[in-house]
Image (cartoon, rainbow, N blue to C red; front, side):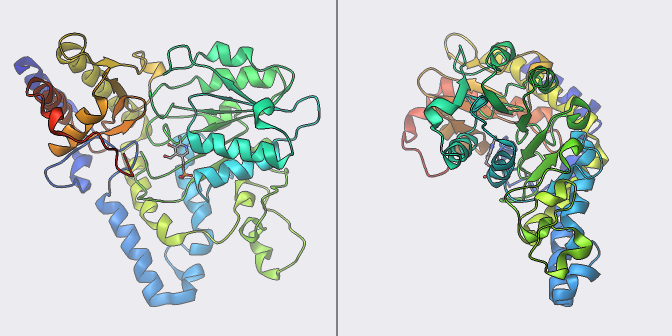
Length: 426
Ligand SMILES: Cc1ncc(COP(=O)(O)O)c(C=O)c1O
C-alpha cells in the first residue's frame, strides 16, 4: 500500500477543495465516512445558527420581519439559495417539511386514480419511508396497495435497470415515484431519461433526491421533472432533522396543494386570516405550517459554503474520491482471501456519492470493528457497509486510512470481538 499512500498525498495536494475541510468540525480521532446519512457541522453553519438564536433572544416576535434574513421569508430565501444546486427555476424550490411529509403532500395531490390509471410505479429498492407513504396514499384513495403499487424489480438485489422501469410505465400507471440515487447501493438513475419516457406516456414523474442533492448537479427544471423532494441533513450538512426541500415544476404552479396550510397562503395576504385558501402560485404554496426556523438556521451557512465550493467541483472531487476508494478496494479487499465486493455501479454516470461494500458473512461486525477504530461508515441490511467520502470535508488520505484499517481488521480478525446485536441506529 506504500505507493497508494504516496498517491493519496499527491491527490490531496492537487485537490482544489482541500481548504474547505478546515471549516468543518470533524469529530476528534475520527475518520468520518457517513456524510450521506448525517453531514457534519461547519463553522459557517454554526455562525448562522448562532445568529438566528441571538435574533430570537434580542428581537422576540419581531424576528419574523426584522432579523437579518426575516424569518417570514426564510424558507423562500433558502429555497432560492439552493436552486442552482438542483437546477430549479425561480419559485420552483421551497424549504419545507420533511422528505416523508413532502411525499405525502405531493402524492396526495398528484395521484388521481381515475379507474383507468390507478397505479403508482416505484421500485423494490426504494427507501422504506417512501414506500410507506405511497401505500398510505393509495389507501387514502380507497385502493389496495397490493394491486395499485407496482414495484420494479432488481435482478441483482442492488441495482435497477432503467429500461425495465420504463417497460412498466403501462397505461394503468397514474404516477411514477423513484429515487435519484439508491440509498443502499448508491446507484444513480438517469432522471432525464426516465422523465422523458414517463412524459411520452403521459405520466407525471417525481424523484426523491435525498442521496444526490448537494453531491451531484441536477437540471430538474430543464429535464421537466414534475416534482421532487430531498432532505438537507446529508450532503447539504443542515444538521439532524433540518427541514427538507420541495421542488415543483412551474407547469404545476396553478395546481392547488391538497395538504393545505396557512404558510402556503399568498404571503402578502396571509394575515388577512381569510378562511378561503389562496395558495402562492409556486412551490411556496406547498408549505403547510410555520417553518422550523431554528432547524433551518444552520442550513444558511452550510449552503453558502457549498455554493462557494461549487456543485460541479464537488461532483468532480466526489467522483475522484469514490474512484480512488474503489481502486483501493479492488487492490486490497476484493476477492480472496477477504471476500469483499462493491455493488455500486462503477461508471461515473451511474454512481452517486457513496460506495456500497459487501461482505458475504460479516459485514455487520466489520462495520462495528471500523467504528471501534474511529472510522465511521454505516450498515444497511442485508450486508452493506456504506462508505461516503464527502467532497467538502474528506480527503484522499481518509480513504487510504479507511481501506488500510479494513485490511487490518480482516488480517487480525478484529471483527470477531464485536457484537452481532444491532443498535437502534445502525
Ligand atoms: C432516500 C430517503 N428518503 C426519505 C428519507 C426519510 O426522510 P425524512 O426522515 O426526512 O422524512 C430518508 C432518510 O434518510 C432517505 O434516505
